Image 1 (cartoon, rainbow, N blue to C red):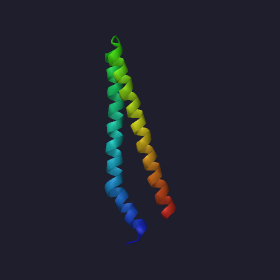
Image 2: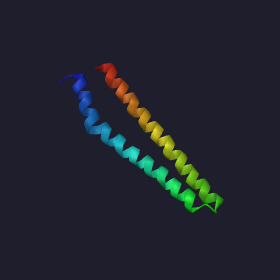
Image 3: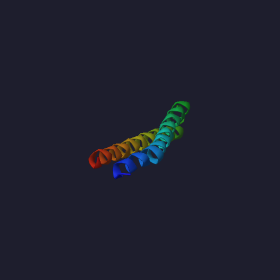
Image 4: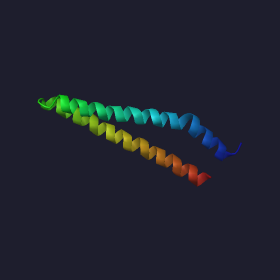
Length: 79
């Protein structure tokens, strides 16, 4: 087994499911923030909480997709 094959197996078996799960969690956090923001339209505190959840959801998605890009870059560099 070559190192490239090993990286492909690690990515397929471990990294891809983890990245998918974390992406889903960040997206759900973003959606929950939207729901909180709209539901608490009359309450400034609830709107602020919803806004924070949306911001953290976006930050999470950016980090996750950035990590995925770094893994792809390393994979392309090694192979």
